[in-house]
Image 1 (cartoon, rainbow, N blue to C red):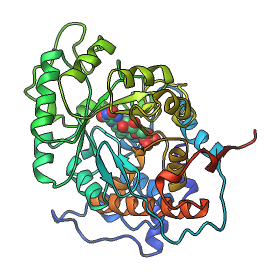
Image 2: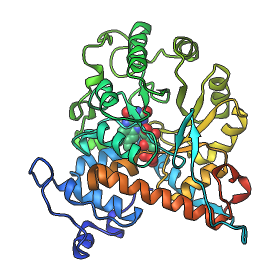
Image 3: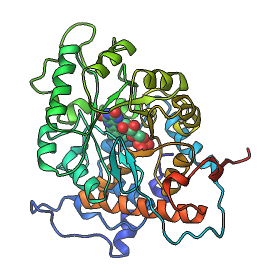
Image 4: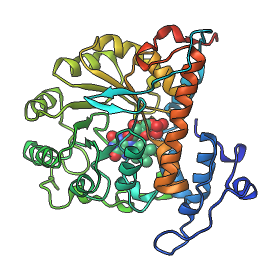
Length: 386
Ligand SMILES: Cc1cc2nc3c(=O)[nH]c(=O)nc-3n(C[C@H](O)[C@H](O)[C@H](O)COP(=O)(O)O)c2cc1C
């Protein structure tokens, strides 16, 4: 559920507690987003971001498709799952580490690809990558972010995953894949839930056009078609055969992002995907799509160990992350929580949020009587009686 900032701690509360830093940022400007970085709990982050962002950017990040039923459902479905604690199991030493696509993670969380990161913090994808590496995890760098993918890879010293929207023909795709390989990204994700731009009603009402608001340097100078049926943001004719072809042209681990059904998960695993990324785009694409946590067990069953499984959609707490791991996910991605943390406190804000999230995961594991990520299983969760 989109947090109602009025019902939570606000920036004014933080101010009253002396938790707002008022020093100017490196540029000498007192950027509002840099000042609000004193949150102490994960619940404090969204209200602080609400204070830091303009109304239209707040709506852009929080909003979803149509009536936003799926945005709400992601959250409600997580809340309907209960955790079943087991006692007296010796939980003094806990290990939250895991491995995703051959890359070690300090805890089973990754940063979802988000376009327009510079709307939240000036250095965009760079701040995200620094914060991820400082906390031992990996970001998906989205094609619609800035700076250019080559510049992010050159600047940071740690593993990066890349996310591609299919916006052109095979020669355009080959060009993009070769760039991602040359920049030594560790995995390539293709987002498949976006054949067409949805109606996001908050943006429509606000006259907010993300394409105009955000820079897209990764697309500059590429051979994207500007006319014809596939012109514009997405190549609507992209299908399973084309995905199979994409699989065949690269050795990079391939992630298929935006899978919701076991049927599609099976197809993606069959054609050699290394990870199935269960996502409804945070409720931003198809309104009334199911919550991701509802679909996760069937997807895990269909994949049957042929690929790893990542999930996102409404994840905001350590308990949420642990629920998905118990149901068979290998890692959880966070989208809006990352954006809010960036808006509230820039790179340091995101780092702090990730430390809090890791701490919550570790505490939850202890309370469930589990000491390693791989020991989490379905016996740790149950659905709340209606
Ligand atoms: C502001 C915003 C921009 C996004 N941009 C992209 C994108 O460029 N590519 C993509 O695959 N997903 C994009 N997503 C979807 C996220 O990757 C992720 O699936 C979603 O945010 C997860 O749900 P959560 O926000 O509830 O954590 C975006 C999400 C948000 C909130």
